[in-house]
Length: 499
Image (tube, rainbow, N blue to C red; front, side):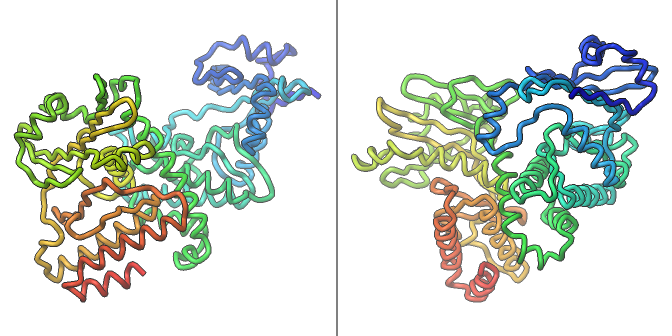
């Protein structure tokens, strides 16, 4: 049965007994989004501004694809209409729904639209934090905002509603920076779902997506804990006893979403040139491929990449082992390290058919570590040489890391406590991303300006199986503890922290 609901009397004049779908198709306005089966447009009527979201039939192919992926297909505007009314009932601010229409019984060909009042003079939280330098929240307001978003999240999920696009860009506040509960508006609910209760699968997707969208905003661990305390309405002790699985799943989703575009951007095997907005450059020539940091490329790095053998022969030798050669080279005002990895023998050559190079392993790991808040070397470039079958040599070029090697630090009482905190945080953050270092001895850590930097990431790996990761991270812990055999007080203290 066709449906046509108008809740705002003034909009009845817009339709005047005409076909409402014909009216919507002919409306003049600003198109914000346009897809094959959906269009979002802002228009003005009677000196008021509105948004219309018009859904056309999605087709059986899209419906079956969603079913096979265990997702609820978006068949029209009805879901958003219902969810907006649900939010209003829960006293969560959202765009005011004023018109709904639907026609057609075939779900693959059903047409529908929803009209909402525009949110005038508002800004998305993504734009506020990443693009608007002239609008700045005070620390007090940032805390109030975080607490109210946590409260909104808890209320939604407890009442059976999950968003499915739960990112900061879908939260709006007025430009006067009202961050009260009433002043925060939640938008774009066309994919939202309503049930008696939200399954953990969908709740973790919402919370993981929200944390992913906030990862570049400088949130502290304390901020995250404050959010979780309000969201779960529990003490931290109870959260870590009862909700640790929820946190792990949400965190995994957040990091996976955050790293997906980064891994694509740092992909050395990509045959497409990097976009102008990218911070990287890539290239190929006969039997060689490379990817490099754009900032240093025109400062001598391009010459190093194109003349690696020359710079390896002229540089200051740091280490020379079978399959592993490191030299130090001056690059304008900086010192860089070139680490060369090469095939050690026939067996090693065949093994490389099934694994990436150690230079590329370190390159990727450094980006994963940085995402988790672990300080690492600054990698500048990776170069790989290959034959008809596999890679034969690889090079990792990085900036020299200033500071003092951890095994050479003169421990004072204050430094001892600082280093214990940093090492404990290092292991905790590895667990966040399911990575192990592989050679976590003290000589692979540097202390600089009260920050701990980790080096030698060429055997660091992300572990997808829990039992393998647990075994590998325990080896990292044991390696760290062994490095302090000469200082039993620190070793005992670290042991209590780790276990």
